[in-house]
Structure formats: structure tokens, C-alpha cells
Length: 341
Image (cartoon, rainbow, N blue to C red; front, side, top):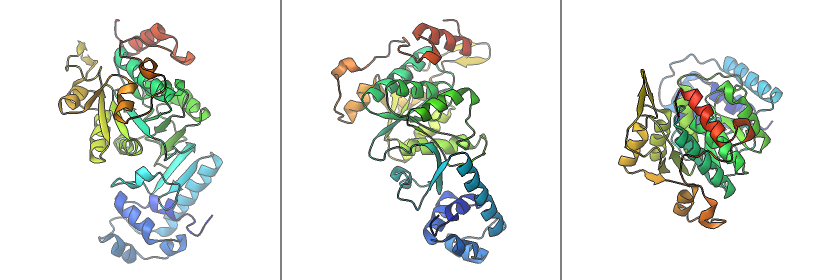
């Protein structure tokens, strides 16, 4: 371990600090010992305010030591703000994490990622389009990053894997606490195919309601562009969209989600609610029908011409064995959503 020792893990554990304040401490100290020996007053002088939580560096070091030990035992890597390996796009946002934990291989900073996000309860057409676009991006050498949630996120990850490239996910929990548990097999496939699970939360941290909005800023930060496939008005996907605009990223809506905000109602539950994505389209987000639309915007050299891309026709194609074939997957989604196709 270098002179920084556990410094960055300690900073990540300090309570009551905003992200920019943590980064300020990362920049202000080069050795673990210097932070541990600092007084509360010295820390307050650096962050220009009074600390609200008790200053107990011995306790914080013990927590960081436990994080480091757990990471070693569970084969979890971590990269700090001070490291050259820290993803450069994360450095550009206002609120980067001081430490990023990961299992697998970090994304290549020289390659572009597309974030694909959306509702956990998609229409079969939206699920198919997420899968097809992610798969076709993969066939052109473009990886996808998402949140491993049920629905659109998981379909995008599966499609990208089918496209033959590493795919990446950011979790709202520690990378050893895959949530939802239904996607643990998918997480394993991601690791087996050269991708990564990423998180700002330490090993053993469980998912909480507030961790998902925080997670979304990392998804948009690591991507060059964000595609929202289908989402209702109140959706974590729309939080990702808002953060992408703040970060100056390309923002698109899939053609299925851009349709007028008509949705079917069954009992008390709204199905196929596209009001969120329809509003994004009305506000000027680009409308994407295929992976080719994204790559043409980037002036990407496309292999195979237009025939390389699927269009949104509602069919579910080339689905991995774990999901079943096209009609089988459509039927499975319908059962999950409680829909009569």
C-alpha cells in the first residue's frame, strides 16, 4: 500500500460531508497519518464550515480497515479519486465519489458507453427495443451501462451481452450485494464476459431507497449519451435524464417511449405508462428508433450498413437461452406484468 494507505477509504467513511467536501479532503491530504492526526478544527478550516458530526478519526479508520479487508476477501477492487485509474468522466461531475468499488474490469476510458435506462414494468415493445438497441450497439463495439434493475435495465444488459461486448452496471448497493436478487445470474454473466459491477458504496452495503437516485448520477456520468426507453412521470430513469442534461450529455428517447402518453389501466395499476418519456420527447430529446440512429449522430463508422440494425416492430428476437425465445419472452413479460397480450 502506498503512502496514502487507507486515506481515501477513511474519507469515504466520514459522516456528514458533501461530495465536493470529500474531494477537497482527498486533494488536501497525501498520507493517511496526516488526516488521522488532524484536529476537527483543521478539517473545518479546509471545508470552510463547522463539522456537525463528532470527529473520531480512530473510529473512521477502523471502518475503513474493515472495508479494505472485506474487499480483499471478496475480490472487490477499489479506485480512489487520487488514482490515475479513476474514470476520467467521473472527475468532470460536481459530486464524484471519493472511492469507486468494482468487481470485474473498469470501463476503458478510451471507449464510449451508452446508458440505457427505463421503467421496471415495460411494455413488451419497449423491452424488445431496449434489447435490440443494446445488442446492435454491442455488434458495433459499443458497450452499455445501466442500473441492473428489472425491466428495461436488465433487457439492455442482456442485449449488449448478446452483442458480444463487455457491459457495465452501477449498483445502489455494495458490489457484493447484488440487488435485485433476481438479477444475480445476469450479474454473473456480466462478470464472466469482461464487464463490471460498479458502486460508490462499500462492501456489504445494502440497497436503500435513497441510494438509487445517487446511483443514477454515476450511470449518466460514465456514459457519453443516455437513452430513456420507456418511463412514467415519476421515475428514476427521469432522474438520470435530468442529471445527464446537467452533465452536458446527449439525451435520447426510444421511439416506443416517445409515443403520446396513452396508457392502459387495469384495476388500480397503470400499465405502459409513457408520460415521462413522452414529456422528454416534447421537451426536445432526440427520438431513437435503432442503434444506428445513435451511431450516426456520433459519425460512427458502421459495419454492415443499415442491415446491421433492427427496427422497433415489437418482436423480441435473438434472446439468450435464459430468457427463452422471442414469443416466449413476450409471454414471460406479459405474465410478469399481468397483461393479456
